[in-house]
Image (cartoon, rainbow, N blue to C red; front, top):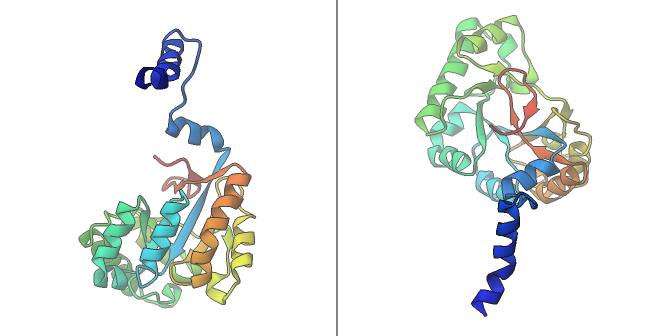
Length: 224
């Protein structure tokens, strides 16, 4: 029985060796299914909803960029490590989420530098991506971020989950994504967590996969 069970595998291996059959790996099969990549981003963590969010993303084969607030990274280092262990990317979202364009250059520097340190201390690595709170930026914010080697990332699609958007609306927003684009979501809304399985289905139906955000272009690309 054992021999007969393995005969198809042995035959496939022989054909592959002869060059008459290509046996796809899981990685190549997934790559073949991707006609483009999108950037899923979640702001304001880590917090009470992070574990459930990570579980849902992982179960649905999605990866995302987590734009963490420094104050929460410092308070929840284990959750930052959980983000990394779940194969997510960790970005900088300031320390206390102020309106940076209304702050002095020294305050902007403090908000960004303290977050870099908090995330690194928590085991999240040194972020390369920065999302200014509220998407508000100016030349000073950009220059300070650049000083820390950070690329500023805004978004192409706003899920409106911060504004009590329904799960249906969040899924629909994700459905508007096209190759290279980035969507704004948040770590804390229950409706966002509920939307994850359907977001995965919606993207898969369009041949889109969740990718990393390139520090060079600011666009979603295949994970490195």
